[in-house]
Length: 359
Ligand code: ADP
Ligand code: GN1
Ligand code: MG
Image (tube, rainbow, N blue to C red; front, side, top):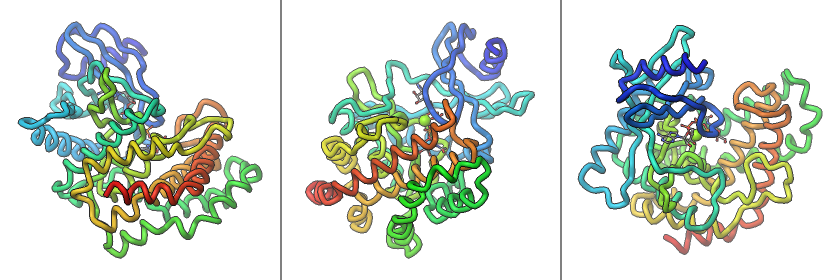
């Protein structure tokens, strides 16, 4: 495998001679490796083709968006933001398909950076908010409808509910019996949770370029914990600002890990929420519409619900989508999301008033 990885890395126009390649990062979807050459470091990824069916369109989205951002910051970049730089393969393409039909790509490694799975303090949450807010703001004028949908209906709650109900009917893994409490939780909220989806259908909120996977470990921070780079751009496509704000609140404010087994440890920390929101709105409040701002707090419940539902559905499907480390892993993750929603429900008035006070 090691020599294969060397060969794969050498299929890209990297500077210097490849010295070492080793697994890197903790994403649930792609396989990432750090590549060391005699000249510099790179990040090599095998893209998950079960999840991403159209790598050509995905790559085109990514290159168009990163080129656009790179241009925008070329002569004004006070916060020293960085943009992912994709390295071409020897054949000139931005990805390379090997003999096994696995698909690979390479980025410049962002040096002196770190990613976190939890916000260690409010400064980090504020910086994360600023970084994801910056991304939304910079892409405000980019024609969202010219981007491909890399995963169709990715954050479409109706689609996710349908998938869940189909999984219940099929019960391929024989697990429905153990999730009655979770089924009740979902069905009790299934109607009210469609609020944003309905606003979108009625054209009351604008489609924007959104990241759609704004978990905390998709931001790189520098040694001083300043947010410097938004990574994991596979799901950049048309969406609502709610998708990015809500998904980020899900991970930036959780007092426990995404797969914490002791649910007593799981809650939404209001101080982390305030800090993230302040950072996010510092960047975006000038461009967001009233109908977006007034429903922003709700998006935290929506995105935590969607992702909890997806973990639960994958558990029922027999763990076919997310990487898992043990048989109940997806169920544990779903339970954490649902506990977090309860904590958000308990603090919802404060969540709304924090946004009111910041806008
Ligand atoms: P996944 O889709 O599996 O989450 P990511 O693109 O988020 O894959 O990459 C996984 C991890 O690799 C990230 O959380 C981050 O720690 C690290 N990483 C990704 N790209 C870079 C980069 N260009 N420079 C440095 N680290 C990176
Ligand atoms: C996946 O790729 P990664 O680990 O950043 C998933 C997200 C989920 C997240 C839950 C393409 O994100 O949608 O919110 O796991 N990405 C995809 O942790 O499905
Ligand atoms: Mg990631």
